[in-house]
Structure formats: structure tokens, C-alpha cells
Image 1 (tube, one colour):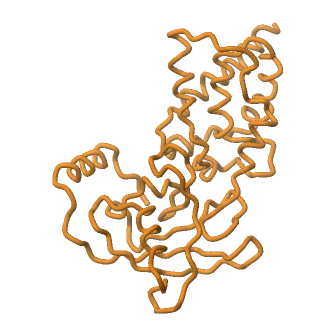
Image 2 (cartoon, rainbow, N blue to C red; image 1 turned 120 degrees about the horizontal axis):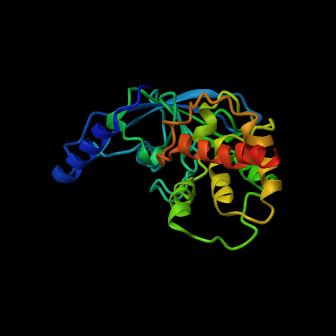
Image 3 (tube, rainbow, N blue to C red; image 1 turned 120 degrees about the vertical axis):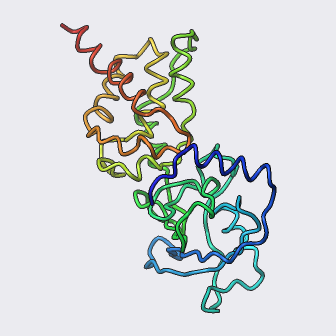
Amino acid sequence: MGRVPKSTILNRRKSRRETGPSEKAEPVRIDILRRKSTDDAPYWQSFLYTPESSSDTVAMALTGINSQENLRDVDGNPAEEIRWEKSCLQKKCGACAMVICGRPMLACDAFLSELKQPVRLEPLRKFPVVADLMVDRSVMFRNLKDMSAWLQQNAEPSEKKNLPAHEASRCIQCGCCLEVCPNFMPDSSFFGMAAMVPSARILTFSKTGKGEFQEEYRRHIYEGCGKSLACRNICPAGIDIEGLLVRSNAAAVWHRRAAKK
């Protein structure tokens, strides 16, 4: 699905706030790629959901479908509750990330009125599927642990350092960037932008142990990144990934090489 311009989305959402709920819309067909467990074969199952307003999201649709007492699909067959992850539903936690109409998105930020129908929902493909739309994203956190991606001492804030550090802190570890990355695979030594963005904070503030972390950055991020920047426009938080990547590469690779000469 093509990306809807940000200005268009903001105008639509402003209009919703001003006009309030619209009349009940026509039912939306939602096709879901389901799987009972990790070892079971996937299958497609379709449901109907009637939005209450134009601001209804995929998260609201899944909640509404699961709230039915005797859940049935579009063909009238009995269906089990759809399994998916959620937490804040405010674009802060990343738990509800999934592939929506071919694009990794947060279910809480995917408005049905802005999606091509039927709406197709799939689990993220780069992670092991637990069940239905639930995946195991623990590899992202193991990668950060392997890199020791945390400060070893108190940070020293400054106007120059605060801006990039704040930008990096907005990462919600949803995994959408890894979904579109042609170089990332869960079992590879390249950890992707989900590790690069937190690393930018370490490289901004770290003093002691910086040499060791620079080496980890070079091995797990710099050497594996093909610079395709497929992740640039996919981040739900709108992080300036390209800017952080350029800054981090300079701090971890180019400045270090220059210091050795």
C-alpha cells in the first residue's frame, strides 16, 4: 500500500475531532493470516467489522471482533479468538506491530478509513510466530544485551547532545524497521536499526568503555547495513533514522579510524 502523505493524515484526523463520530459505516472485511501455534500451518480467515466512526483503527476492529460472544467468520463458521498483542494503544509501546495491507504498522495507528479493502492482517515475518498475529520479538532485546547497549556512567546533558539523544530515545522497539530491512535476519550478526537507534544514545553520551562499544557497533551495525534506507519512512515514531545513522557511523567508525592514524 502506498504511503498516505502525513499532511493528509493530519487533516483527516483534525476533521474527525471537529465533526465527531460519523454515521455507522458499511462493514469492513478483514482477512487475517492465522496460525494456532508455532508448529501449525498458517491459514486465512475473514471477518466483518462495522466501524462506529471514521476514526476506528485496526486495533479497535480486532477488539470488536473478539468481543463477540459466538465468534464466527464471514462464512458463518465458528472461530477462535484472534490472538494479538496490545498494551498502551497510544503508539508508545510497539506491542501491536503487524503487517497491515502489506506494510508493517501499529494496529492502534492504522485507521480503517485509510486502508485498502479488504484489510489484510499478517504477523511480522522476520520473527517467529507464536500464534495468529503474535510474534516473538525477543531477539531485539537479546541483541541490545549482546552489545551492552546501556550507559556505564551518568550522562552529561548538553544542548548539543540532548537533541540526538532525545531523538534516539523515541524508539519503541516495535520491529517495523527490521521487517522491511533487506539485510536483517534474526540469526545474523547484523542487528538492524532497532539496535542502531538505542546505540546512538550510547555513542552520544558514553565516555568510559566507548572503544569497546564502538567495536560492537562496527561489527553488528555498520558492517551489515547496506544503506538501502528502506527503514527511513516506515518508523511509526517518525524517528530521523538516516540522521542518527550518519551521526553514529561518524562517532563509532570514522572518528575512531582518524584517531588511530
